[in-house]
Length: 154
Image (cartoon, rainbow, N blue to C red; front, side, top):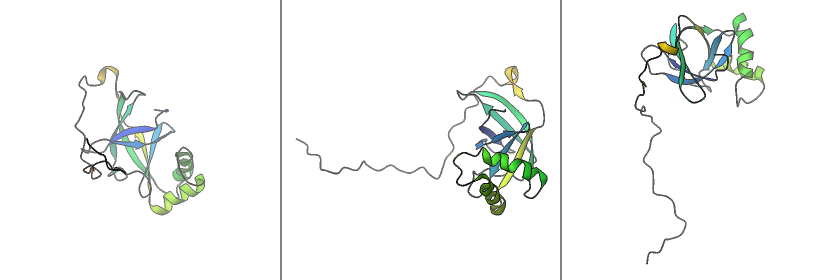
């Protein structure tokens, strides 16, 4: 878990989402909200299931997680938020500005801590558990390629 950068997190009966995370203090921290990734239901949840995958995409472990929202202004926020912000890739500006923006915009910093026995090794299912791709609003009909000059046919 300490090398994780992406975790598949499912809340309730919703499908799992790939979320950027930062490992810290034996838990995974996830930031979601305006200007950050979307994680519907995670900030208000009490539990979730976390799946970590290896370098080649294969599932290594799945574990139940206790979800705790870290509130701005608390000691937990002051300790965790700057460390998570420092690991945030492609962030614009200094770490302190990012932490301030998270607090001002109402972003949720959630802590996913292990809350039970993981499914690993022999406890993983033998089936692939593959699902068909979900529909997305970004799918559109493709146009014919643009051509600058007329193509003459003989």
